[in-house]
Image (cartoon, rainbow, N blue to C red; front, side, top):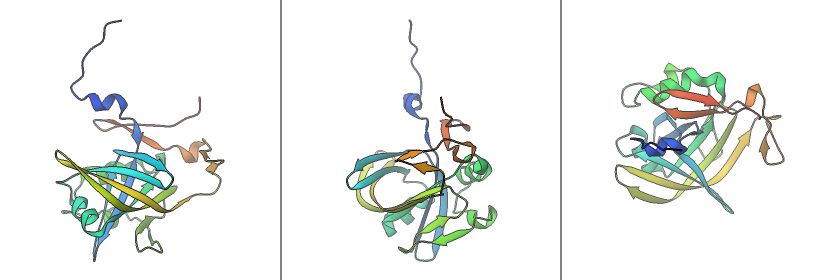
Length: 176
């Protein structure tokens, strides 16, 4: 079978889960949409988050050394799109989207409407071209009851996690 070459080859593996990343430094807070996220270790539990250096939240994460991966479901598509298209330099996305926030015991921002979260403390930074990959230990986590069991998602309409395909296209996880 003939193969074609693509302009953005990372999109071939870019159906990653969408997260609403919250961060804060001093009194400045922001939330942005990210899908360049991946697990990197189970023991200790760690993740990697790739953030463009030009993004508003880049400076907040760099200064605070912390962020939260809030995991939305399909019902939050409007918020996901908005937070991925508007800069925190220009708008207060928490107010615009009427997010209900909770403060974690570690003083990080959790989004109440999201179905799960991973609270992360940065342990290492890797500079890659126009981005920094933040390697972070998961210091706390939570998921809505009835959505996760035996270390796996219970696939249902409520747990339909969004995946980003690129160019404003999303899909969800469904059982096969």
